[in-house]
Image 1: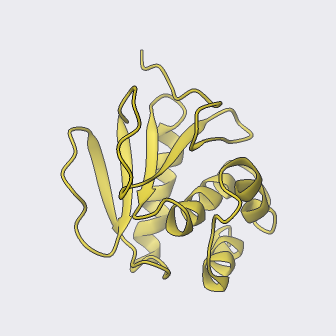
Image 2: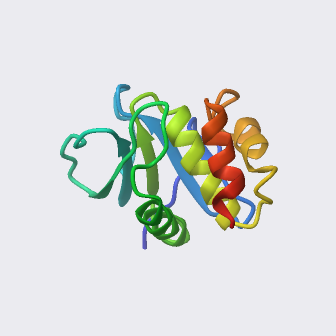
Length: 143
């Protein structure tokens, strides 16, 4: 049985369902403690190698995912796996793309799309979801 992230740890977002997901900037050192069971890397280029299972979602900095259908599939997998595994969502800085992906997970978890950005800003990082088009992406994610 996997021990999930502690919801009080820095960078860990607790969704309304009780699922917990860690957001992280890959430019920062790996936090001490447990490693993820599964990670989604949101980068414009191939991510660094890690010793746990991961998926790369091509997503250039300050932009949107290159493939919206793939993004929906990968984020749905991350949300489902967060019920029983340590899931990490990570981009370069851990704020814009990571915040956008976390807001999409919040939508999958039942947070209304028009409130998901505010939810993530309160519970994860006050500057999460950095651009107007990222905010619009979250609002349209439920559609």
